[in-house]
Image (tube, rainbow, N blue to C red):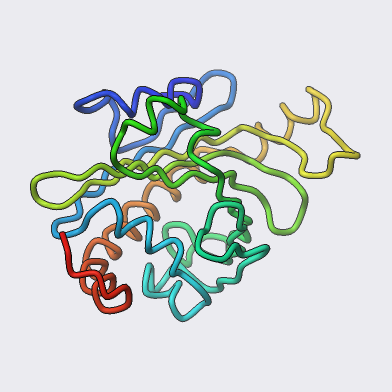
Length: 220
């Protein structure tokens, strides 16, 4: 699916591609990952992103790939509006270290506001960019809905939405196309799919216990 079809996640059931990579002729790629999380709830995933702090906590999420974590413009009581500054491998140390700036956005910027408010789950949404240059390269959502066994996370990384973060220096269409072609590669998408599958698997293992321990909320 493309970003323009993101509201399809609000429909019941599943989409044709829930885990894997979709590549398009114009250079855009969508990375999809599905994680089933027994014993967790959507509210716990929302809490996790608000609780997540520095490198020590970040490495709980993926002990091998995650290397560094910090925050910019951290908002009290919410992660929305904050930027998570990370260094990480994607899919193992045989690849490069990716230095990323993940700017969390209100879900109603991505989803139809009325439909999202009636959804009942949680969508963690962000713009993904470079930490070394004022460039965004994509958008993402971790779309979480409760189930009879806990919850499930349907992650989508929409790669290729290139934009300058410097309002004084917007990209031309030619610059945008060139950045997309050189940065949004098949290898990046493949590595991101593996990484997302692994890190959310780790999260599913420890989140219910961690949530109850630190939040004090024992309700289900």
